[in-house]
Length: 272
Image (spheres, helix red, strand yellow):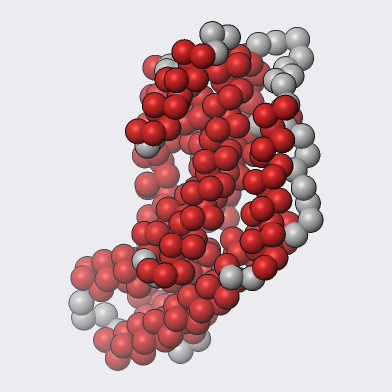
């Protein structure tokens, strides 16, 4: 977590002696920060086109969505107008991220491990994916610049300013009890997706794991806890392992989507 965020957290803890108030303030602070980071990183990407900048923008937006989902019962209904604008934006960032990871990580690693496989199809594959990436970059930059995208971010910023007047309302239990109950339910959802463990279920598990990760990080930032810290560590390890599997599957789908690399498709499947 950034040093400035930790410093603000300590300052708030000194000003708010009530642990419930501390927790609620920090939830709202993280929501604002993740939204601000998403917007600023996307705008930076339009100038630099750096892969890591886009990745960090997606991390910030995933944190935003995960926090909104986890804390939804405590929050007023967010505005829905222009909601499709960010759905389109998120879809375009996902398409470009898949191409970035394939071209910069997954494909080079596979090629290094299989230097003699399907050499006659390889050059055409890489050339086509680079062309697809250029088109995806153009489409994303165009979507970021749309007035409706800026309007949607502004709506969310305005909504979050109003959260200052919203008080914490947890019925018949403390905030800590409420959060623990939400974590248990989320973890049960993750476990329910693991049997049978198909690629589709693994993908859903990864999304739920990210939600759990951001929820745990938000709670740990305000209140250290050894059990939650250990759970977060296990969560991150699973994400890394499943992330590699997902990258391999995504690369296969990109190869198959081109329709003219039958031998490479077969070899890739065999390597999985």
